[in-house]
Length: 517
Image 1 (cartoon, rainbow, N blue to C red):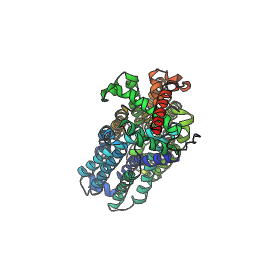
Image 2 (image 1 turned 60 degrees about the horizontal axis):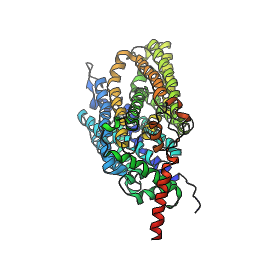
Image 3 (image 1 turned 120 degrees about the vertical axis):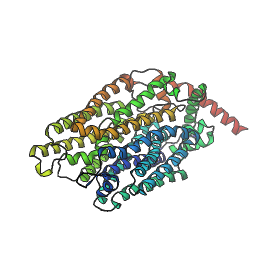
Image 4 (image 1 turned 90 degrees about the vertical axis):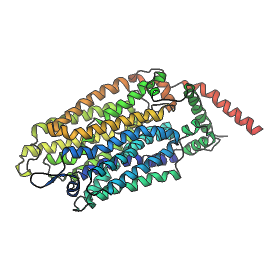
């Protein structure tokens, strides 16, 4: 029988749909940024100053913004339990439903800051869980030749969510009623319901199916994902490879959280690498612009509406992420991260220094701004745009790609959960403390991000290996052989040149005997 030529159309369609989980996260980041300066939102959830005017203090901004991140931290860890118990597909539906409940609580809020923050916490549970399940699912279902591209799709959906939220905020912010913020916030119910609909057509991960002794279904899923017949050699070889890897992983009994940091197969290093990349990503500085760009740019004295600037940033992010779909499989993971560190560090340094030495004090009336103040504000915004563009191309998607492809099946849900939880922990800390720090030191906060990017460059060079073009099982071999990260680009796998052949032949012999019988 001639071997069929595999195609990836079905796998791509699934990856695009499942990456919609990133859209939920991105949309919420963007939508709350605009709500924080809407008059009706401030009147309902703010305080009254000595002049009798409503205002939203930096502490209240922090609480409203950061409670989602607190929920995401818990959700990212909790999904490891549901991903193994109910499968990847079942987990997606469960956490999408929880997210939708959180949105309902927020939308029904009238004047209670407690209710809206609680609603954001509940929604955060769903967002955090999905942030771990999406790279887990895509990493296990996407063929290795396009796996990086499919994982980048998650970041692209995050950026598209941010961009759409900016457009919605721009369209509704002029309303003097609660519709100005209820419409943008309430739309998230639709996004949750769309993702929940996946229960009707999403297949389960073939790795999880084999892990739970459902081989026949796993074979069908592998055939469907590659658009080949069920009896094609590709299906046989993939099943053989996965069964060999699962058998090796099952030797130690049931996996625990502590095993993620064990010396077995260098798991401690892989888990720490995944967590460190997420930590560095959050302190790149881009989320400062996403969360507080409206208020920050307003103080820069620009003549453009803060909503227009945010929409521009969102558009730049979308445009910047598109090339990453190509670069992730051509340049690879290491080169993308190293290049991004350099470009973003330059932008942070210039924006921070220019802002510090040229901007007027926060709250200065626009008619009192000097020409130098305005030029400084325009320069800061220009480098903010370049920073966000660079982040979207490199540091935005690549840590998620790395997280989705670095761990063996045995501990994959738990290790990815730890990486995602690290992302959300620092997202929470940044969103909670950034407005306070910026209130004290202004644009110099960007120099903190500059320092982190310099650190990130050296960390990637010393510790992050290249995983482009490797199957998830070959990544295991890369770590077991302790390949130096700076030499990993030229490394070639050889583990499965021998061992799966026997396994494959055994499977074929079993199949032949069964058919003969």
